[in-house]
Length: 187
Image (tube, rainbow, N blue to C red; front, top):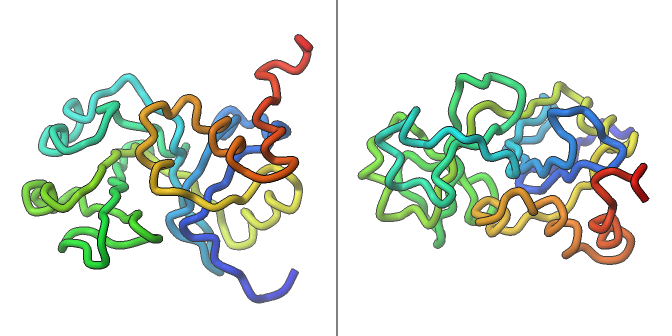
């Protein structure tokens, strides 16, 4: 592997059927940061039964449907991340662009300062993290497909179907993987 790390920030990691770790089985991960020092992302398709208002009351009215907290990954489950879509070129104070219209919201900022400009907000408890080179190794071993993200992935109204939906829109063989059965032994 070359010493140059090409950034995957803003792309999706889609778990291959071979990835059976319960934290990531059929997961769709949005990479929020990827560089020589490692990678950080959130799992987009793990809604919890916990309402946003139960943990972050001030953000409950702004969070998009379903208005629940998503389990962003197995690391720091007591920490919350806000991922938002903001159309246009300039985002408000308290928002940092990650890729395209996707960015991170400072959840310590007053919600009313950001509310008018947020196209969509989703709250994640925890995140997925990889040390230097770890993600590249997992991709090389066949644990993840790396595909382009679309703003609608973050705001999917049906997150439980996101794994199949993201694969289905790919070209060639990857689109076929979307038909992979939940339990291959039943085929």
